[in-house]
Amino acid sequence: MVELKTTIAQGLHVTDDSAGYDAACKRVLSEKAILARIMKSCLEEYKNCDVNDIAEKYIEGQPQVSAVPVLPDEGGTVISGMDTEDKSVHEGTVTYDIRFRAIVPGSEEQIALIINVEAQNDFYPGYPLIKRGIYYCSRMLSAQHGTEFMNSEYGKIKKVCSIWICLHPPKYRENTITKYRIVEENLVGAAHENAVDYDLLSVFMVCVGGPGNKNHTGILRLLEALFSESLPPAEKKKILQDEFDINMSRAFETEVSEMCNLSQGVWEKGMQSGMEKGIQALVLSLQKFLKDQALVAKEVAEQFGLTQEAAAKSVQQYWKN
Image 1 (cartoon, rainbow, N blue to C red):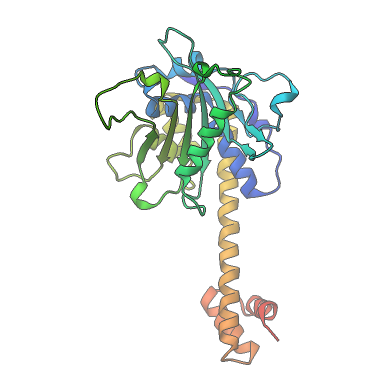
Image 2: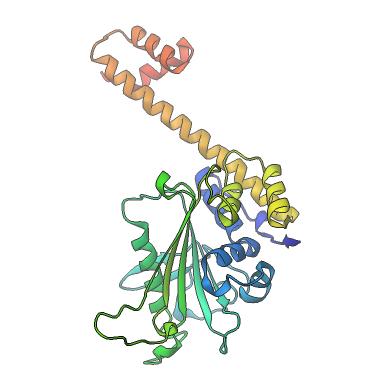
């Protein structure tokens, strides 16, 4: 049984619930036992590997989570998961959630994959996520110049992958895993090149959904349970142990519990914010027809289940003179 050992559970010192929840999600996701199962489910190179081997043999060092920015030309010791910040004078800074190297098993050479994993709550942030994933891969490719290869040594370029864990996708994408990559297509004739020379960029969309779907198994089931906002920590621990043979260490269990607590805080803040916006909209609407604040307060109290005193305060706060 795999035991997750980590000290990151001790490192959460944030005051903003949403920022803390986001950070906790990334740290939970960066556990090697979780990453190994994501890799086995998504990457062709690992589909026949044991998850314990992926975690212990093929993931290099400890994956880094949104680390302190380090400029590539300023030296320093970079082991484990590489820097999570990619800086370019002309293109700005890209901060990756989790970035690490992995060795491809069974290859004659020790070919490294540079893998980026992102936790994404909003599937429609104002642009297509797929394009962002392709951009991230492009940055990881171009950033290899001067580190993986020099001058025109393009044969040394390492394959890169960007895996997006989408926790709240639209209904039609729930419980799906989709891959986008470069493929060879003959337009005239039948010329062929080695796939290793062009299959250098892959983007994966792992869209989590709820039960009741035939695809709700394996990594999709694991991620849904792990990041569920309704399951208590004890139930998550039971699912990880019984269904996925993952024995949560005390530190990892603490991290999951912290994530659950923070998610509750985010939900409560969201509910409070939504109620306040609703009250404000109702006050401004009723004010056009009812000039008496007391009558408006009565309506607000009935609509939102508030006491008359609390409703009166809200009306006074949002009333436009």
